[in-house]
Length: 573
Ligand SMILES: *[C@@H]1O[C@H](CO)[C@@H](O)[C@H](O)[C@H]1NC(C)=O
Image (cartoon, rainbow, N blue to C red; front, side, top):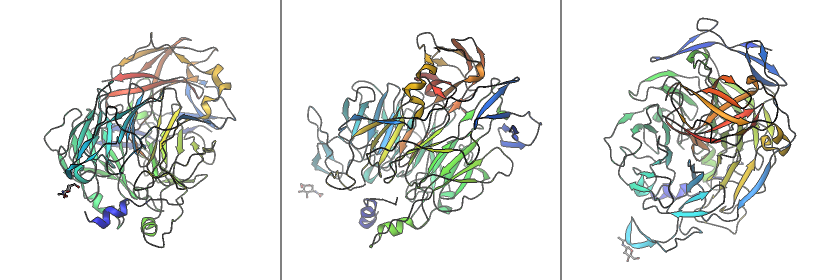
């Protein structure tokens, strides 16, 4: 890599920022088959007050509880010491985050002092922490050690709850690291574990608990990485699609990756997307292009796989699979931003949705209330999508996927803290959102308009309105099942101070993703099929397989007419 190229990467990247029958599908080993009508059965939605309620028998659920509350920001820590470029919530409710080891001094040192020799010159040392374990409840910080640079790396949780972090920069593009959540655990590292260089790659868990790690700078391959090993046999696949989607300024890094209900991988890069068989490298489908600009790094948009609504019999044909891709920038935006006189083109304000299960589906486009590049999009326990952070876009937006087109966006309470490039966020067990990081500079820099940001906030979405507390379910963790088995029924006990019908209750599951550069790797929300409701206990059906729910830890929420409980950690394998 040239020095010039490296220098460019340090640049602050600040772009200005009625009832309907849906087509049915069949998921097979060969991919997703399509059918319209009743070949495999159909599934109906009813609309009430703009929100949808599933019909069970003849019973329509009551409408969601409404609130005018636009959310609330709480300052959780004044100084966490390290800026959160990449962030992972662990199942002990501690968040692990880190930036890069080449940013010079951070605001946190080790006690007792610890200095690492620089990989480039062992007679030089670095005595600052570049990673922390942050207690999301009590705000305590424990510095973590890194030997090799995890800059713009990728990650995900293994089935046993370990963080598996892949790639990085400089000496560490093939690094793999394992972090086990415990009181004094540190990262274990192998600087040469991967089969190819992974800098700005995306990682996602597969049905068997292995990971795919896709792409990276000037790397047109992907590989399969086992979950708990620092050394393993390379399983590398060529992926010319990454070459096809590479612009002069790339625009295809940190691609959007989702595991689909048939075990295949949806991969979106720049403006194109495919469905890929992970263990053969075969492209089994090409989806329509998304016009309008670029959606991946450096012109990063936001993306989620919309919630998967499972049925009580876990029938695959009932699944509607849709992806959302919003914002980004024009193909040449980075070129304008890096060359003097620097010019920041306005970010995109479109939000686009594509069904992967509907025959001949096209991208369906709407307009967001504001423009976003490098924003975060998080799935909430309710199944709605929170869009936040970005190059000085202070106002979060809620996206309601189940509402009718034209009624899906709502702007929320703005923060006062700019969360620019290299910021991140995470859904927590109490259904609040952790918001942290931001550093559009080469070093930790404080005396400027958009400083390195070490403050940690929590955002309370509208569903945490105190006026809704009387409708809020409270899970009884002691009585409830927490170790789930694929396809098997399990019982969640909860208290609710009012009568409700089964159709008013949802049980949702969410694996904590690895978030960096606006993309939450491994994020998904499962809405479980329900069997029986007895006032204070609900029998739910666990997801049928690792294709729907890769093995590991999930937060489980009981949601009563859009008011979520505090979550409970469950494990499925
Ligand atoms: C390593 O750093 C030392 C101390 O600054 C310096 O004298 C030496 O030349 C460096 N070595 C290399 C290979 O750059």
